[in-house]
Picture 1: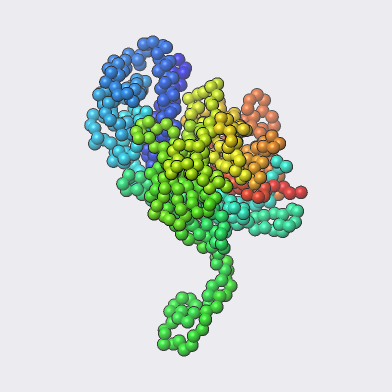
Picture 2 (picture 1 turned 135 degrees about the vertical axis):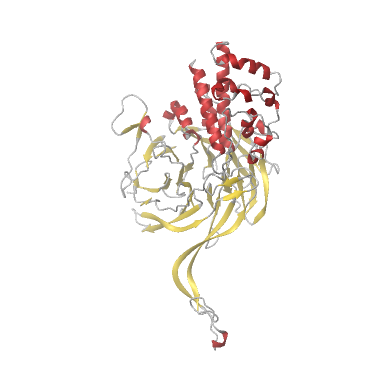
Amino acid sequence: MEVNIEARRILAVSISKLYASRTQRGGLRLHRSLLLSLVMRSARDIYHSSRESEGPSGAQSAPEEPMDTSSSPGEQTRLPEPQQEPAFNSAETDKENLSPAKQSRKRRGKASAAPDFLPSKRARLEPGEERYEFLTHTLLIFKLKVCWSTLGHSLQGQSFITGRRMVPPSTSLACCH
Amino acid sequence: ADIISTVEFNHTGELLATGDKGGRVVIFQQEIENKNQPQFRSEYNVYSTFQSHEPEFDYLKSLEIEEKINKIRWLPQKNAAQFLLSTNDKTIKLWKISERDKRPEGYNLKEEDGRYKDPNTITSLRVPVLKPMDLMVEASPRRVFANAHTYHINSVSVNSDNETYLSADDLRINLWHLEITDRSFNIVDIKPANMEELTEVITAAEFHPHQCNTFVYSSSKGTIRLCDMRASALCDKHSKLFEEPEDPSNRSFFSEIISSISDVKFSHNGRYMMTRDYLSVKIWDLNMENRPVETYQVHEYLRSKLCSLYENDCIFDKFECCWNGNDSVVMTGSYNNFFRMFDRGHRRDVTLEASRENSKPMQVLKPRKVCTGGKRKKDEISVDSLDFNKKILHTAWHPQDNIIAVATTNNLYIFQDKVN
């Protein structure tokens, strides 16, 4: 179903953006992350509503069903998403690390999503992330090389303005009068 | 690093300040030739350049703090010097820009080059005299307002009382006194107890131009809240909530993103305010909360392209908007170095382009048109050939005259109305 595919694609794009934003200069932008998560939620909702209407079909759904159902009962109220997300990105997910029990772990923030799939716990959380509070509506599904590279990001060169050109203001404007 | 990130005229329009991504502020001054003549030309020349903010590092959070200037706001002039507030993500600074055109000569203890004289050689006393010198413009930081924002500062706004100003980040708004740097009052806090319940952030805030107790702030959900500081110390509860119901036919994955307000500006007369979201500009009457009085589509042809704009990140662009001096025309930027003006009274709008090819001196700007479908006429540009890397996010209008400043990515264009 087209909407389904579109939703998945948008979700994948969103996740890659979320991941990319973690390494950008200036730190995570709350507003941008919020908007990304809203898009992801819409995409997720649409994906699931279209899947429900489809019924259990397709190669993807079979391996994921047991995981979905097993994790839902153990679920905390605010985290319906996490175990759903892995459903359609199974190709990129490290299955053995998907532990539904991890879903109920207390969430510190959106940024801590990635390590949920990894067997080790807090040690994998990057030092900066714990202090950063974020939305938890989303999940990073890729097997990430979580490298907190704010230091690695070289400062942009302080190239001073040479290209700034000011057009003489005598250029006239033809409008509005 | 010379990507322009903010543009602002001062209250007389004589000075124009720009801030860039490298933390520099460049101020231009208007040189007027024969203002009394009917056809006057004004040029803006560089007046002062200084490094306002440097990159910093927050060691506790292992985060770099960008030096990019997010906003510049001028203070009304009280004496010979000019003052402006400039801010990056975390720190606001008050800068004093002053002119020096005289210097004292004839010191008793110093030579002219500054070297100290041997006191034994001094046989007489004289009074130093002030002699004219080449004009020097000095910028010095007078106040540094730091450590008050956990999140990224998006707005500063000077109060009409000329003593206080507000600064807003994603979740909080603080009130400062211009003289006091070690303390600020938090007047709005929308941070939820549980960050996972966060649904909206503050995107812009501004004080009313005349009522020193009133300010507004816009949100990522497309709402604007007007707050009255007389009501309570903490203005979490708004006095007015401006919100237009969403048109259900326009619902898409990206409805929430495009309804996020990127800029809010009061009109000069204080009766209206303008908001900019991704596709439109809306004018609100402060007395009517349930819908805007005017809505202008900036680039409606992008509505069908939202998915690609999401992928190339353009959908997150924050466009600003501005009023002209008498609130009859509003202006905002778009892509392909286009900017748009909407004449409220005459219900006309125009699209213009800021580019080197079209901007020879004395050349009248030609209106542009984007072809939205079907047959493309000559001189029209099709939506698919728009350059989305060329965006005009920052524009400013002279407070009295029809002079506008338009910032493309690296360049500043100043246009003037044709007077004839």
